[in-house]
Amino acid sequence: MFYKHENDGYKQTLVGIRQKTLVYGSESLLTEFRLSEGGLLPKHSHPQEQTGYLVSGRILLSIGPDEFEAEPGDSWCIPSNVEHGARIIKDSVAIEVFSPIRTDYLP
Image (cartoon, rainbow, N blue to C red; front, side, top):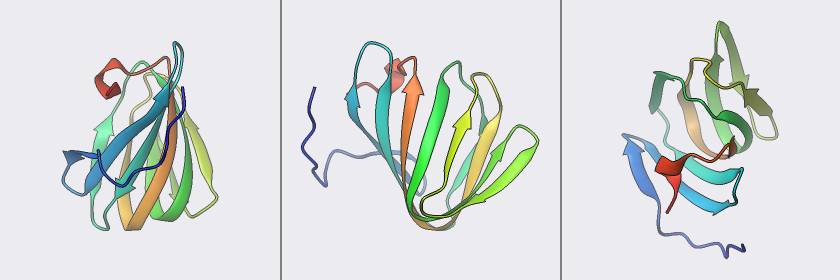
């Protein structure tokens, strides 16, 4: 599967949080998140492992009991079923991989 970058097709999942699945296979899914300053991703968990990379901006991540202020070039891995959330400090772009795939993120 190939994906040619386009600026449309993003879904507003929460206020200040837009996402678009870029590519996926049978075991993993790659998603781009565009996050607006002041946005909040409430704490939640899911059965997928989630690995991320911050392309631009700044976000405060909480993963279990830990907090981490991510800046461009930083990355993280969230084990399955671990509660996590984020506060968007500065407009940001993050790329994340979910494994196994999140069927709710399929286009």
